[in-house]
Image 1 (cartoon, each protein chain N blue to C red):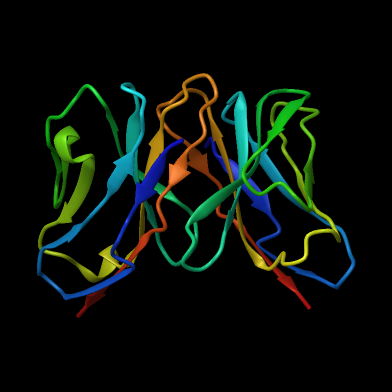
Image 2 (spheres, rainbow over the protein chains, first blue to last red; image 1 turned 120 degrees about the vertical axis):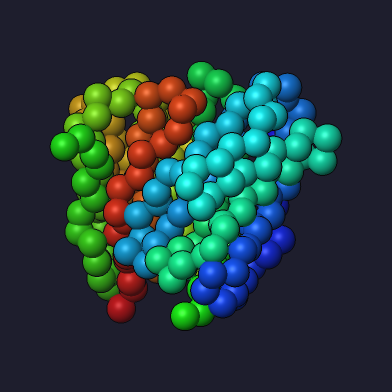
Length: 115
Length: 111
């Protein structure tokens, strides 16, 4: 069985501050994919990134960056110079069972950017 | 544009009624999924379907039913057996482990 833990339930930061959202996962499989999704107030989940278990390179996309560390089973997400539009709920998720691909989600972190 | 359409956006159900939530995709994806979202609990899998005419229970299938008669459609029925149906329901589809495409959700409220 797999599990995703997002220990931070809610985070509030002032605009332009950097913020890191934590994600810790558990799986016995050696091959898996990790994801981050953003859920704005409208409700739809927006795909942000996918990372496979064999690629530990960190990734940067504009103000977003992701730090994948297999040694600590973590896949943390950092927003640099946060903006009000970043306010949303962010979910980390995991797939391990290829051919029967069910996403396992964390409980989400609600991020509020204060203007 | 390809995507997933969920309808209605808001749905109200009386006690004891069955209601059906619609999910349609034009992405030609084989797999489709239904998730339920409650505050502070993340998303939990209700049912999923890998191919037409086949579906499996997820983690919280009790009180729900689905059908998959067409590749494009995966409706979810919330039956009267579901004792606490008030929640936000999300439909998704996927074609490989690249990730899911989600619909915009249906908010169901029992009145």
